[in-house]
Image 1 (tube, rainbow, N blue to C red):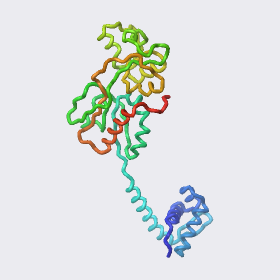
Image 2: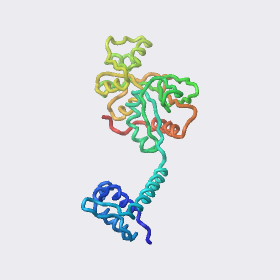
Image 3: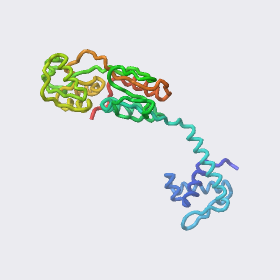
Image 4: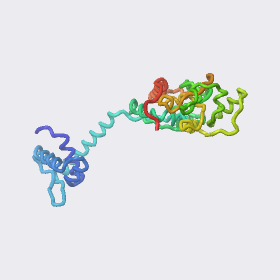
Length: 290
């Protein structure tokens, strides 16, 4: 006997399950004629009538019923074996400050998915301290001084590198701090303008536009509502695309974005950490801002 075609067996199985060539064809996204022809070929090869053709559909013959039990089990085994060949998807939860997530990470997630299809990355927007022993988090990015957390590996991701930015206009692209603070100021939850003015002995405006998140302050600057002081990492894409310009650049700060994760580094966690570092080095994202 010639070798039985696997497609014929699959169509026979579908026809047996649905009791109709038409419904089997719909399930397989084929034509009814193609399914019926394959079943006829199978009956010819096996020299056995597998179905009774009835006005309202199909009914397995006694021989067809016994054959279907074996074929169905064999197809299930093949499907199980095929699934086992595919690499299991690993889930990694990354905790990121909300503004870093929206202004830097989210536009780059398509790159991550393309490079690591076997990793399902879950983003948790938070600025609170992460307890890796209790929280369902694999990696955290936090902003500030170097955090000291027991049993946690910490490494720098990017310097904070604050810059005063505003929408491009007739203003000079390089101003002194004294000139910059005379412009409409936009504060975020860190109140950096107020701290800076107090440290330098400069007058702080009685009224400023204030937001609790840096991302919102950046959006306000993009729409021309004033000057905000933000980490370069968060505004680099907007600078690159001409939505913002740098008016003033303060001295370096010891603060930075830090990567934190448990000292036991699983393979997929290591892959995410490596990708984050690569994206920082790669620079601005080329996807246009909305």
